[in-house]
Length: 625
Image 1 (cartoon, rainbow, N blue to C red):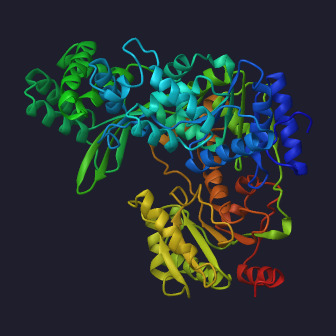
Image 2: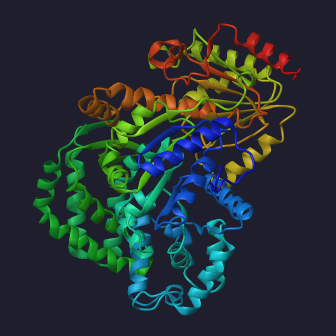
Image 3: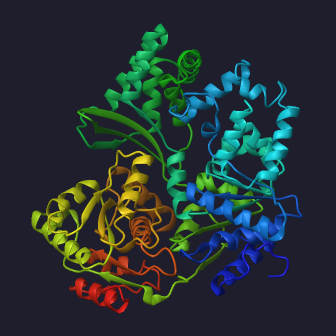
């Protein structure tokens, strides 16, 4: 290993290969996309060469992840480096600014409202936490600098460590984090810190770095395209307008009130003839022309922002401010965007939604990819890497590598069940009964816990009607309304059935379909159907866009994103080298070339009309029964 700051004494063969590849790509400034299955040790294999390379240079490593658990894994890796080599590379873990705020009552605010509220408090000199941390001209207060020095020696630690210390010292935890980050060699953060242009420019300016000085490691990279599309998307709903009208009435903004009623009429006009779950495309100019009948477009945006500033002084949040932001965004972005008006059901009433939807994540990603010192993106489900390279705008020189699972092949069996499907045209009570019967027979044959993932809550509940009585184990249901605490409690109770067995019924795109680790608990995962997006107007626009750009519309806009969810669901089962389990893909379409080609080569799923026999045989040979 030479001078490499690798956190462990031993390195596995596949991990060593990945480590050498990362090192070479960093040294040659070549972008890298890596499919690295669970258990390979990808966090250590990327951080070690990146930190080693950056430590003696004017560079900083950004480890970007959307998951709190990955923050903790990265922190532990850097703690191990610090302990093993008695060096402190300087690490800080940073979350969203709102989550590092010591002010009360801010956690429920929309991001835009929080940022405006924070700005107003600072500019008006009303935030004592900020004033205790920075002077009026932005310099770090001497006492705050002493706290930052102490924190540098105590880190790496979760972001809560600085939040608690800042609150205790009556200092701004975010500004303390920035002060620590200024001298850090590793910054663990959410994607937003580099891929949101406004946040990136402000943050890099504060820590005195340029994008060219950043080695960027993107973890769970399969999530990045969706995150960036959503980040660049804006929506205006009739609900927001109604809330804005109430605000204008409450604070007597009469001119604003008249204009809001005009905007409300525009949404009604654009959606004329649409009923529930119907939608149509609109053009940028259609909306702009209608707004101009109310007031000059730019003047209206300024008027709404002025009113929002006044309202936020009274109640922190403003729906009018959200409309002002929408107006500004609507006039930007044409290529790679679609504009859709839709009528949706919200509770017992229809809601009209006008959206400016981003289809092309490369619009937000390309500046980072092109200008950073280097970019390494990895995930356990980054297949095919070529799709992610295309949709995110990686250059042709990018190295793409797919590693096999480091776990023994004998530890799992993958099965495809023919004769069943969740295709919309084939859905019937008979189909649901058949799916329920096969699922029940499988989980009843598994010595332990199982999870079953469905394409939607609606389909899950249809199958569950027949499944519950047929399953000889306790059944848990994922609740889409559950809080983070509720979900953790459910998983805790589920894990208590490790020996007697239980069944979790979840949804492919839900909270349990990805990012949940139950090592030693799950013995089987069944994926019912294919979690394809609804073939709505947005999906059709995405398919058309990628057809024009890459001639891969169906693959990039529909099929491969669904298979990524399937692989994530299946990945909940085998989380360590001692885990053993069965993966069942219950839809005959998985056996067709269109979907079979998407499975990692080492999975090699078997087509069988008798999955129960395979399940019993597998666990019998594994000394489970």
